[in-house]
Length: 79
Image (cartoon, rainbow, N blue to C red; front, side, top):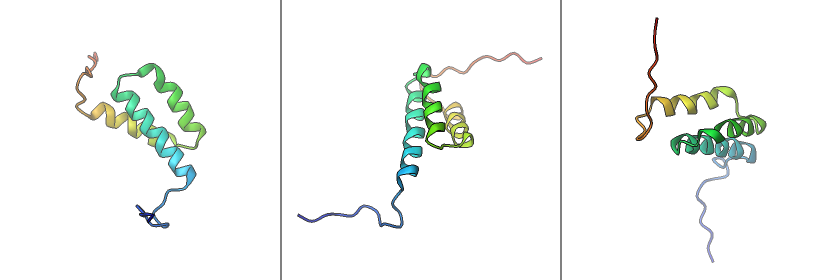
């Protein structure tokens, strides 16, 4: 049986990078599914595996700026 290589060794992600990426994907999926009660736990886990707060903020900002169906924009009073 022949093994097909999807990425070269140079392009392969290390375990740490894969964990960080997975944590961010789970956070994004929770936001899209509107499972907000799990977001803090996912953020805490992401930080534990080494995701920096800038990357977490970027995922949240992307979600807030996207036109996600079902998500309602909050009304903010400005003075």
